[in-house]
Length: 539
Image 1 (cartoon, rainbow, N blue to C red):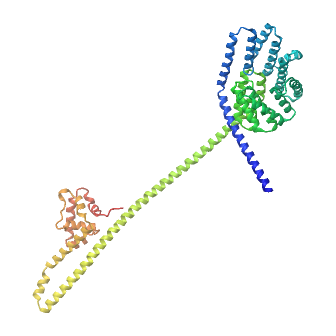
Image 2 (image 1 turned 120 degrees about the vertical axis):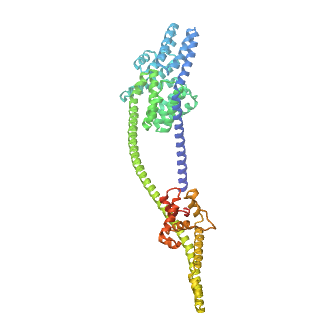
């Protein structure tokens, strides 16, 4: 049972929530429609004026006084909610025509129209004088109905105009008496009877019943008609009393949209809507709508409507200006905050820039160090290669010379044992073997060096003038090339070079000077340039 109850509550809550969301979406849509409609007010005014001009053209062609009277009534009907002064002017013309026709019914009808227009324009004293001088009992039935209807509207407007509860009771009593009389004059199935019954129920606090009648009448009214706007306004007031704000706003919007489309300048829908939205906190729209209502009142020239708006418009305008001022203060605060943020950002960017420069400098230094390390590694690789090649070469040479030395020793020992002293003397005095060994040493040196530095000679020649360049014979180095080959291997001591090549120190200096004299450029740094020849590629 509890689960069923919970499910029902959840279902009702969901439906209520969905309905509220639907109503809110409809109101948002109606607000947008009203904004667009107000923006097109000039179009609707033009349409209204064209309709009035059409009636005026018919009036100009009409000669019959009675028909002119009825055409004037059409103009009065158009003007009485459009331009007050024009309505009054045509009413006065009809009073003259009625007197010319000596038609008392026309005179009373025109005076009742005059009283109604005077009451909605704010001339309540003049309107009361007319009501007071008309003999109600002498009026025909339809004018009695019009009298009661006009007198009710007169008192309703007077309540709004005075806005003083002290005097409201008198006017409410007058409305109640006049409404009872009016309802007795009307058929119970007529729309006017039902409207007045709805108003009476509302005055008695029977809001639900009043809303039911008013809603049925509203549904029967043609859209974009004055009756449609009046019914929507009535429904809005009833829902206000019921506390249903969504429906109050909805029907207020429908009334306002219709009034603007019909170019009704004597209306209270925009004013009431502005007041409602102001209370709701929608300050921007409240300000726009109260300004539109004020323009309508000025266009209509209604003292009554201007007086009512004057009580509300300063409040809404003050709230609107306060909001604008608050927005300005907020804007200044935002501007200040943004300025501080920009300063912090600039300072941060400055330090970031400094850090980037530091990092870039460190990266460049690191790249330089890396380059140096790579070059050092290359030199180490090169040195390792040279060491491997030359260590292997000299180990082999040592083994060869040890074998030769041992063979020489054995040869000497045999000759001694054989007593071949002359042969032994010749052997020790001969340099042939030494020259042969030296030649083999240099040949092996050249071969090993060129194996390590295959492009040495070509690069060395590039340092010399074209006509002074060397050409290898049988892939062997000459003395000058061997000197600089030793320098390339890192042997820069002249004594060591002289010992290895079996020359005097001066001879080595002479060879070096001779080669430097052949340099194409920069002879002072010739040896440094030679040390770079045949270097391993970096990377």
